[in-house]
Image (cartoon, rainbow, N blue to C red):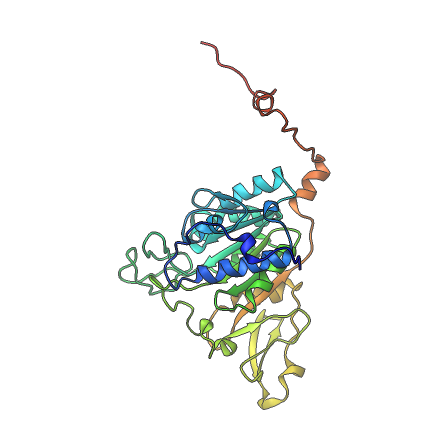
Length: 335
Protein backbone atom coordinates (compact mmCIF):
# COMPACT_ATOMS: atom_id res chain seq x y z
CA UNK A 1 0.00 0.00 0.00
CA UNK A 2 1.22 3.51 -0.83
CA UNK A 3 1.42 5.11 2.61
CA UNK A 4 1.32 8.60 1.10
CA UNK A 5 -2.28 8.14 -0.01
CA UNK A 6 -5.49 8.07 2.02
CA UNK A 7 -9.16 7.92 0.98
CA UNK A 8 -9.23 11.70 1.44
CA UNK A 9 -6.83 12.02 -1.49
CA UNK A 10 -9.58 10.62 -3.70
CA UNK A 11 -12.36 12.75 -2.18
CA UNK A 12 -13.48 15.95 -3.91
CA UNK A 13 -14.95 19.07 -2.37
CA UNK A 14 -18.32 18.42 -4.04
CA UNK A 15 -21.42 17.89 -1.92
CA UNK A 16 -22.49 14.25 -2.24
CA UNK A 17 -26.07 14.21 -3.51
CA UNK A 18 -27.56 10.79 -3.15
CA UNK A 19 -30.62 9.88 -1.13
CA UNK A 20 -29.86 9.21 2.57
CA UNK A 21 -29.33 5.47 2.94
CA UNK A 22 -28.46 4.90 -0.75
CA UNK A 23 -26.02 2.08 -1.40
CA UNK A 24 -23.93 4.42 -3.55
CA UNK A 25 -22.38 5.92 -0.41
CA UNK A 26 -20.90 2.57 0.62
CA UNK A 27 -19.72 1.88 -2.92
CA UNK A 28 -17.92 5.20 -3.39
CA UNK A 29 -16.20 4.72 -0.02
CA UNK A 30 -15.12 1.22 -1.04
CA UNK A 31 -13.78 2.57 -4.33
CA UNK A 32 -11.69 5.20 -2.52
CA UNK A 33 -10.25 2.54 -0.20
CA UNK A 34 -9.44 0.30 -3.15
CA UNK A 35 -7.72 3.15 -5.00
CA UNK A 36 -5.52 3.74 -1.97
CA UNK A 37 -4.59 0.05 -1.86
CA UNK A 38 -3.89 0.02 -5.60
CA UNK A 39 -1.53 2.97 -5.15
CA UNK A 40 -2.12 4.98 -8.32
CA UNK A 41 -2.01 8.75 -8.00
CA UNK A 42 -5.26 10.70 -8.60
CA UNK A 43 -3.85 12.20 -11.80
CA UNK A 44 -3.31 8.67 -13.16
CA UNK A 45 -6.97 7.71 -12.74
CA UNK A 46 -10.10 8.57 -14.74
CA UNK A 47 -13.76 7.83 -14.02
CA UNK A 48 -16.27 7.79 -16.87
CA UNK A 49 -20.03 7.60 -16.39
CA UNK A 50 -23.28 7.86 -18.31
CA UNK A 51 -26.63 8.95 -16.91
CA UNK A 52 -28.28 7.86 -13.65
CA UNK A 53 -27.63 7.96 -9.93
CA UNK A 54 -24.40 6.01 -10.36
CA UNK A 55 -23.25 8.50 -12.99
CA UNK A 56 -22.44 11.07 -10.30
CA UNK A 57 -19.31 9.14 -9.37
CA UNK A 58 -16.88 11.40 -11.31
CA UNK A 59 -17.96 14.35 -9.15
CA UNK A 60 -17.04 12.56 -5.92
CA UNK A 61 -13.75 10.89 -6.88
CA UNK A 62 -10.68 13.14 -7.01
CA UNK A 63 -9.38 12.12 -10.42
CA UNK A 64 -10.03 12.92 -14.03
CA UNK A 65 -13.75 12.54 -14.73
CA UNK A 66 -16.09 12.42 -17.70
CA UNK A 67 -19.86 12.60 -17.23
CA UNK A 68 -21.01 11.45 -20.66
CA UNK A 69 -24.40 10.61 -22.17
CA UNK A 70 -26.81 7.79 -21.47
CA UNK A 71 -25.33 4.37 -22.20
CA UNK A 72 -22.25 5.63 -24.02
CA UNK A 73 -19.75 5.58 -21.17
CA UNK A 74 -18.04 2.31 -22.33
CA UNK A 75 -17.49 3.83 -25.78
CA UNK A 76 -16.04 7.05 -24.34
CA UNK A 77 -13.85 5.04 -21.97
CA UNK A 78 -12.59 2.95 -24.89
CA UNK A 79 -11.49 6.08 -26.73
CA UNK A 80 -9.91 7.49 -23.58
CA UNK A 81 -7.91 4.32 -22.92
CA UNK A 82 -6.70 4.08 -26.49
CA UNK A 83 -5.69 7.75 -26.50
CA UNK A 84 -3.86 7.50 -23.17
CA UNK A 85 -3.02 3.88 -22.29
CA UNK A 86 -1.27 4.96 -19.08
CA UNK A 87 -4.54 6.07 -17.48
CA UNK A 88 -6.31 3.72 -15.06
CA UNK A 89 -9.82 3.99 -16.56
CA UNK A 90 -12.99 3.13 -14.61
CA UNK A 91 -16.52 3.10 -16.02
CA UNK A 92 -19.52 3.40 -13.68
CA UNK A 93 -23.13 2.78 -14.69
CA UNK A 94 -26.42 1.47 -13.39
CA UNK A 95 -28.38 -1.54 -14.58
CA UNK A 96 -30.45 0.65 -16.90
CA UNK A 97 -27.47 2.60 -18.23
CA UNK A 98 -25.39 -0.52 -18.94
CA UNK A 99 -28.00 -3.13 -19.84
CA UNK A 100 -30.63 -1.11 -21.69
CA UNK A 101 -29.61 1.87 -23.80
CA UNK A 102 -25.92 1.09 -23.27
CA UNK A 103 -26.00 -2.68 -23.76
CA UNK A 104 -24.51 -2.44 -27.24
CA UNK A 105 -21.55 -0.38 -26.03
CA UNK A 106 -21.00 -2.62 -23.01
CA UNK A 107 -21.07 -5.67 -25.28
CA UNK A 108 -18.34 -4.36 -27.57
CA UNK A 109 -16.09 -3.15 -24.74
CA UNK A 110 -16.25 -6.67 -23.25
CA UNK A 111 -15.86 -8.40 -26.62
CA UNK A 112 -12.83 -6.32 -27.54
CA UNK A 113 -11.30 -6.81 -24.09
CA UNK A 114 -10.50 -3.12 -23.66
CA UNK A 115 -8.42 -2.63 -20.52
CA UNK A 116 -10.99 -0.73 -18.44
CA UNK A 117 -12.71 -1.50 -15.14
CA UNK A 118 -16.51 -1.47 -15.45
CA UNK A 119 -18.67 -1.18 -12.34
CA UNK A 120 -22.32 -2.11 -12.87
CA UNK A 121 -24.33 -0.83 -9.90
CA UNK A 122 -27.46 -2.98 -9.97
CA UNK A 123 -30.46 -1.83 -7.92
CA UNK A 124 -32.98 -3.32 -10.39
CA UNK A 125 -34.77 0.00 -10.93
CA UNK A 126 -34.37 3.36 -12.65
CA UNK A 127 -33.71 5.54 -9.63
CA UNK A 128 -32.82 8.92 -11.11
CA UNK A 129 -35.93 9.10 -13.32
CA UNK A 130 -38.26 8.22 -10.47
CA UNK A 131 -38.59 4.48 -10.28
CA UNK A 132 -39.46 2.91 -13.62
CA UNK A 133 -38.71 -0.80 -13.86
CA UNK A 134 -35.34 -1.64 -15.39
CA UNK A 135 -33.90 -4.58 -17.37
CA UNK A 136 -32.97 -6.35 -14.12
CA UNK A 137 -36.28 -5.80 -12.29
CA UNK A 138 -38.01 -8.94 -11.11
CA UNK A 139 -41.37 -9.95 -12.63
CA UNK A 140 -44.22 -8.26 -10.80
CA UNK A 141 -42.27 -5.08 -10.07
CA UNK A 142 -44.81 -2.25 -9.84
CA UNK A 143 -43.55 1.08 -11.07
CA UNK A 144 -44.73 4.17 -12.99
CA UNK A 145 -43.95 2.33 -16.23
CA UNK A 146 -45.38 -1.01 -15.06
CA UNK A 147 -48.36 -0.17 -12.80
CA UNK A 148 -49.76 -3.69 -13.11
CA UNK A 149 -46.36 -5.28 -12.49
CA UNK A 150 -43.50 -6.02 -14.85
CA UNK A 151 -43.88 -9.12 -17.01
CA UNK A 152 -40.34 -8.99 -18.44
CA UNK A 153 -37.79 -11.72 -17.83
CA UNK A 154 -34.97 -9.97 -15.95
CA UNK A 155 -31.56 -9.60 -17.54
CA UNK A 156 -28.65 -11.37 -15.88
CA UNK A 157 -25.53 -9.20 -16.12
CA UNK A 158 -23.07 -12.06 -15.61
CA UNK A 159 -24.72 -14.16 -18.32
CA UNK A 160 -24.73 -11.15 -20.63
CA UNK A 161 -21.01 -10.76 -20.05
CA UNK A 162 -20.41 -14.46 -20.69
CA UNK A 163 -22.24 -14.15 -24.00
CA UNK A 164 -20.19 -11.09 -24.93
CA UNK A 165 -16.97 -13.04 -24.44
CA UNK A 166 -15.87 -11.27 -21.26
CA UNK A 167 -12.73 -12.68 -19.66
CA UNK A 168 -13.26 -11.25 -16.16
CA UNK A 169 -16.64 -11.32 -14.40
CA UNK A 170 -17.23 -10.77 -10.69
CA UNK A 171 -20.00 -9.85 -8.25
CA UNK A 172 -20.19 -8.14 -4.88
CA UNK A 173 -22.61 -5.96 -2.91
CA UNK A 174 -22.88 -2.56 -1.28
CA UNK A 175 -23.39 -4.15 2.15
CA UNK A 176 -20.24 -6.29 1.94
CA UNK A 177 -17.51 -3.93 3.19
CA UNK A 178 -15.05 -6.78 3.71
CA UNK A 179 -15.63 -8.15 0.22
CA UNK A 180 -16.26 -5.27 -2.18
CA UNK A 181 -12.84 -3.52 -1.92
CA UNK A 182 -11.05 -6.78 -2.71
CA UNK A 183 -13.25 -7.32 -5.78
CA UNK A 184 -12.45 -3.79 -6.93
CA UNK A 185 -8.75 -4.55 -6.58
CA UNK A 186 -9.12 -7.81 -8.52
CA UNK A 187 -10.97 -6.02 -11.31
CA UNK A 188 -8.33 -3.28 -11.54
CA UNK A 189 -5.49 -5.79 -11.58
CA UNK A 190 -6.96 -7.64 -14.54
CA UNK A 191 -5.27 -6.76 -17.84
CA UNK A 192 -8.37 -6.41 -19.98
CA UNK A 193 -12.06 -5.63 -19.67
CA UNK A 194 -13.23 -6.36 -16.13
CA UNK A 195 -16.94 -6.33 -15.26
CA UNK A 196 -17.85 -6.11 -11.58
CA UNK A 197 -21.57 -6.24 -10.83
CA UNK A 198 -22.42 -4.66 -7.47
CA UNK A 199 -25.82 -5.45 -5.96
CA UNK A 200 -27.10 -2.33 -4.25
CA UNK A 201 -30.22 -1.06 -2.55
CA UNK A 202 -32.43 1.82 -3.71
CA UNK A 203 -34.03 2.91 -0.47
CA UNK A 204 -36.64 5.11 -2.20
CA UNK A 205 -37.90 3.15 -5.21
CA UNK A 206 -36.81 -0.46 -4.66
CA UNK A 207 -36.03 -0.89 -0.97
CA UNK A 208 -35.01 -4.41 -0.01
CA UNK A 209 -34.66 -5.51 -3.63
CA UNK A 210 -31.97 -8.08 -2.78
CA UNK A 211 -33.72 -9.29 0.35
CA UNK A 212 -31.63 -11.46 2.61
CA UNK A 213 -28.49 -10.95 0.53
CA UNK A 214 -28.04 -7.59 2.24
CA UNK A 215 -29.00 -8.76 5.74
CA UNK A 216 -26.06 -9.63 7.99
CA UNK A 217 -28.12 -12.34 9.67
CA UNK A 218 -28.95 -14.19 6.44
CA UNK A 219 -26.31 -13.29 3.87
CA UNK A 220 -24.06 -16.25 4.73
CA UNK A 221 -26.91 -18.66 4.00
CA UNK A 222 -28.02 -16.88 0.84
CA UNK A 223 -24.65 -16.25 -0.82
CA UNK A 224 -21.60 -18.30 -1.61
CA UNK A 225 -18.29 -16.47 -1.67
CA UNK A 226 -16.19 -17.92 -4.43
CA UNK A 227 -12.48 -18.48 -3.88
CA UNK A 228 -10.38 -19.92 -6.67
CA UNK A 229 -9.01 -23.33 -5.71
CA UNK A 230 -11.24 -23.64 -2.63
CA UNK A 231 -14.29 -25.89 -2.13
CA UNK A 232 -17.60 -24.08 -2.61
CA UNK A 233 -18.98 -23.99 0.95
CA UNK A 234 -21.56 -21.64 2.42
CA UNK A 235 -23.87 -21.17 5.41
CA UNK A 236 -23.37 -19.67 8.87
CA UNK A 237 -22.03 -22.98 10.11
CA UNK A 238 -20.21 -23.80 6.86
CA UNK A 239 -22.43 -26.84 6.71
CA UNK A 240 -23.60 -26.54 3.09
CA UNK A 241 -21.82 -26.87 -0.20
CA UNK A 242 -22.27 -26.95 -3.96
CA UNK A 243 -21.58 -29.85 -6.28
CA UNK A 244 -21.18 -29.11 -9.99
CA UNK A 245 -22.55 -31.55 -12.55
CA UNK A 246 -20.57 -30.82 -15.72
CA UNK A 247 -22.75 -33.14 -17.80
CA UNK A 248 -25.75 -30.82 -17.50
CA UNK A 249 -24.03 -27.62 -16.33
CA UNK A 250 -25.86 -27.17 -13.05
CA UNK A 251 -25.30 -27.17 -9.29
CA UNK A 252 -26.91 -29.03 -6.42
CA UNK A 253 -26.71 -28.34 -2.69
CA UNK A 254 -25.21 -30.81 -0.25
CA UNK A 255 -25.22 -30.68 3.55
CA UNK A 256 -23.05 -32.13 6.29
CA UNK A 257 -25.77 -34.68 7.04
CA UNK A 258 -24.06 -37.02 4.58
CA UNK A 259 -20.50 -36.23 5.57
CA UNK A 260 -18.06 -33.28 5.68
CA UNK A 261 -19.00 -30.84 2.92
CA UNK A 262 -15.40 -29.67 2.53
CA UNK A 263 -14.48 -33.12 1.22
CA UNK A 264 -17.45 -33.37 -1.16
CA UNK A 265 -18.06 -29.84 -2.43
CA UNK A 266 -16.73 -28.90 -5.85
CA UNK A 267 -13.56 -26.81 -5.91
CA UNK A 268 -14.08 -23.45 -7.60
CA UNK A 269 -12.12 -22.97 -10.81
CA UNK A 270 -12.49 -19.43 -12.09
CA UNK A 271 -10.92 -20.44 -15.42
CA UNK A 272 -13.63 -23.03 -16.16
CA UNK A 273 -16.08 -21.50 -18.64
CA UNK A 274 -18.86 -24.04 -18.10
CA UNK A 275 -18.64 -23.70 -14.33
CA UNK A 276 -18.73 -19.92 -14.68
CA UNK A 277 -21.78 -20.15 -16.91
CA UNK A 278 -23.59 -22.21 -14.29
CA UNK A 279 -22.47 -19.91 -11.45
CA UNK A 280 -23.79 -16.90 -13.36
CA UNK A 281 -27.27 -18.40 -13.07
CA UNK A 282 -27.00 -18.45 -9.27
CA UNK A 283 -28.68 -15.15 -8.47
CA UNK A 284 -31.28 -15.77 -5.78
CA UNK A 285 -33.13 -18.66 -7.35
CA UNK A 286 -34.76 -21.52 -5.42
CA UNK A 287 -32.60 -22.95 -2.63
CA UNK A 288 -29.35 -22.19 -4.43
CA UNK A 289 -27.22 -19.34 -3.05
CA UNK A 290 -26.25 -16.27 -5.07
CA UNK A 291 -22.68 -16.55 -6.30
CA UNK A 292 -20.45 -13.60 -5.42
CA UNK A 293 -16.75 -13.15 -5.95
CA UNK A 294 -14.79 -13.81 -9.14
CA UNK A 295 -17.01 -15.97 -11.32
CA UNK A 296 -14.72 -16.12 -14.34
CA UNK A 297 -11.16 -14.99 -15.01
CA UNK A 298 -8.90 -16.07 -17.87
CA UNK A 299 -5.86 -14.33 -19.26
CA UNK A 300 -6.09 -13.05 -22.81
CA UNK A 301 -4.51 -10.35 -24.91
CA UNK A 302 -6.17 -6.99 -24.35
CA UNK A 303 -7.39 -4.77 -27.15
CA UNK A 304 -4.61 -2.21 -26.76
CA UNK A 305 -1.92 -4.88 -27.17
CA UNK A 306 -3.63 -6.27 -30.25
CA UNK A 307 -3.95 -2.77 -31.71
CA UNK A 308 -0.30 -1.95 -31.08
CA UNK A 309 0.85 -5.16 -32.74
CA UNK A 310 -1.02 -4.17 -35.86
CA UNK A 311 0.11 -0.53 -35.73
CA UNK A 312 2.59 0.40 -32.96
CA UNK A 313 1.28 3.19 -30.76
CA UNK A 314 2.86 6.59 -31.32
CA UNK A 315 2.27 9.37 -28.86
CA UNK A 316 0.73 12.53 -30.29
CA UNK A 317 2.81 15.68 -30.02
CA UNK A 318 0.52 18.00 -28.11
CA UNK A 319 3.02 20.85 -27.92
CA UNK A 320 1.03 22.95 -30.38
CA UNK A 321 -2.71 22.35 -30.19
CA UNK A 322 -3.43 24.74 -33.07
CA UNK A 323 -1.19 22.75 -35.42
CA UNK A 324 -2.81 19.53 -34.26
CA UNK A 325 -6.33 20.84 -34.88
CA UNK A 326 -5.36 22.20 -38.30
CA UNK A 327 -3.37 19.18 -39.38
CA UNK A 328 -3.49 17.15 -42.56
CA UNK A 329 -6.93 15.78 -41.78
CA UNK A 330 -8.73 19.15 -41.83
CA UNK A 331 -9.97 21.40 -44.61
CA UNK A 332 -11.50 24.81 -45.11
CA UNK A 333 -14.80 25.49 -46.87
CA UNK A 334 -14.54 28.48 -49.19
CA UNK A 335 -17.52 30.75 -49.88
